[in-house]
Image (cartoon, rainbow, N blue to C red):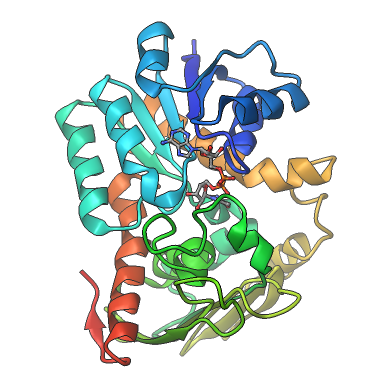
Length: 352
Ligand SMILES: NC(=O)c1ccc[n+]([C@@H]2O[C@H](COP(=O)([O-])OP(=O)(O)OC[C@H]3O[C@@H](n4cnc5c(N)ncnc54)[C@H](O)[C@@H]3O)[C@@H](O)[C@H]2O)c1
């Protein structure tokens, strides 16, 4: 019989309250407890979801001592993932950390080392890898359908208000957000780009805050990229582009070009197959019908459900998740290199 995973969530803000809704829907998981430094906030979120019987703690160690827990979900501010994750792993618990895994590579490395030392598993969330169009792009690259890759790019032209940055007290700070539009918002697309088109070798970036006077970090960044396979690329991310439009991922080479922007806008190959048309129709069907959800929340949470299900499946099979610690580290390594380049006026920086 499949294992029943006992889950706890640390940090029940915007995204922690997605996790508390997702866990009971996984089928092989229960939500046994939550922890938040502001327990009233957690209680309100649980009450609104009909989960008021779930115990709420303000101290993670006390929760870990008193409750039977297999997996701890870390949904605290990005620069405060390492401490609660290490506390959980040293107590013998597996950890799922929200994106980005952490904001500095040495902190991610400590998380990865702690998992190995304590013989537990560590995985990150990158739910857009479970978007059907992104999976189709990845499959087409793996099948060699683009021929020699010439170019791949990702664009996150979003918008956030000044109030968004004020809420929570941590967004838009180097210490807890670890950066701005790129580290917080574009990290998904940066991860997709390297996942789909291959490892990135060098980056050359320029960044500044264009419309948010109160933040320390960038609200807009542009970057020229060179992939290890020789292809060229572009990364662009912004939270300064009202009203904010869909993320775009583009891939092109000697035998094909594809553009995914909310749906699969372009999917053209020199050697077409009968399945291509069917795939385009399926991917461009109205949202909801392809996502299988009956309400906007279902659609919103659908990819989190798939991501977390896939992590638990991998662990049950005794292997690391597709979004393991080292895998989730890759996007942060690219982003840190972009920040270093931007700091030095755009000089090319090697991704490590
Ligand atoms: N996967 C996604 O699409 C997605 C979307 C948004 C945010 N996120 C990520 O989720 C994380 C949380 O973001 P958010 O928007 O929910 O933030 P938030 O401010 O809404 O929630 C953070 C919560 O953590 C609590 N908290 C802070 N430090 C804590 C600690 N040490 N122990 C316990 N609780 C603590 C706060 O009281 C708050 O309730 C961030 O890393 C963010 O990047 C992911």
